[in-house]
Amino acid sequence: MKKTLLIILALFLSIGSFAQDKPKKAKKEKVYNEKGEIIKQGWNFGPLPVLGFDSDLGFQYGACVDIFNFGDGSRYPRYFYKFNVEVSRYTKGSGVFRFYADMPYLIKDTKLFFDLTYNYSKKFEFFGFNGYEASLFDPNLDAHVGVEDYKSGYHFIKRNTLRFVGSMQRNFFNVPNLNWVAGLAYYNVKTDSLNLPGYEGQQTLYTNYVNAGIIKDNEKNGGNIAQLRLGLNYDSRDHNSDPSRGIYAEYTLTGSSDFIDGNGYNSLIQTFMWRHYVPVYKDKLTFAYRLGVQHKIAGNTPWYMINNINTPFFQKMYTEGLGGVVTMRGVNRNGVLGDGFMLGNAELRWHFLDFKFINQNWQLALSPFFDAGMVIQPFREQELKDAAIEDVELYSGNKEGIHTAAGAGIKIIMNRNMILGVDAGRALDKRDGDKVKVFVGFNYIF
Image (tube, rainbow, N blue to C red):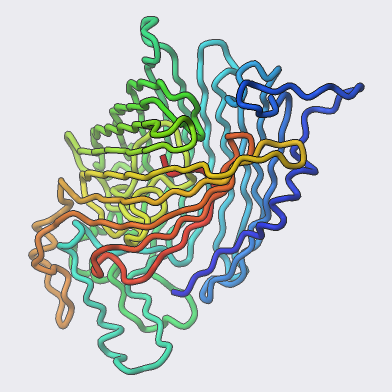
């Protein structure tokens, strides 16, 4: 699949016509902080068009907007609350509808977070289970050796997802920076084999997994999952969107149930994420790293949920991995799937240019990175080893190892909160992908 996602950066400058404080009857003098930044007050809007093209999905069009309220400016650059809306679709039928709200100060001493997302994709990546144990053999390519411009759909499925997440956070017994967290989540996932025009008659890994019994009949078309999340976090960051110092550590215990479908997919999963932001030179150069692990304690997880990372608060629209834009940039998205995983990210964030433009504070940042991860708790490993379909290889015989990728990104930052970035990464092992992957979107990945 040749995919190009373009966001017209020139129109990014049009934010200035929208990103204004709440109108006032009389013009007020600008107030600056000790860093020389304009202290923002009231409402700020940051709209962006989304334009793109995918040879299979068609032209992409839509818009997204970040909406901030800084109140009286006393907490700047922290916001009182933030809303994000994105609506985009492809002309051949795929698209995204999303609304989320992050409200750390709407209610006294309580942080609230809500996310409602509907994502329907006619072409969604699926590379099998347990990382390097899954075979990358593609019978479609093997049968069309030498055919120019042939496109294989072997590693794709159709998937639609409706997601609702609601979380709240409060201080834990007056301990500074320590908070308890509780939340609910609901996922409705629908999956099917790829059925785009041009791929008729092709085999897919998904249908081979179904035929071999690795994916069970009662889960092959998705289902409904409800979750209860409880946890603790420690947050000493100086800023939540673009921190230059501090620690954010999060432990989440997630109980999942498919009581709506009644197929017995109930589980208890623990997730631990550690993020550390180390100032190297003032607030201009920061070394940031993230270490994470997710482990199933008990129960059974349906195949369509093993790529979900259980966290109560999102920085990116997708909370799935491993592989792709939120975990390992350059490794095939959903290329490292298992019951449990280990994850590591490291990057330098260099704010090399600060300037003021259209009454806003702007920064440009460069961020070289290194990402790594692996499956530490395999999913249906024995079924994968025992599977047999004539002339098809489903188990590679390889031992799982560490998947790695490296690259760099550039960020355009407005008011330390609205962050538009481009990341380009490449896997260091060809089994994880042999091309540079480019990602355009909002926010750092952690």
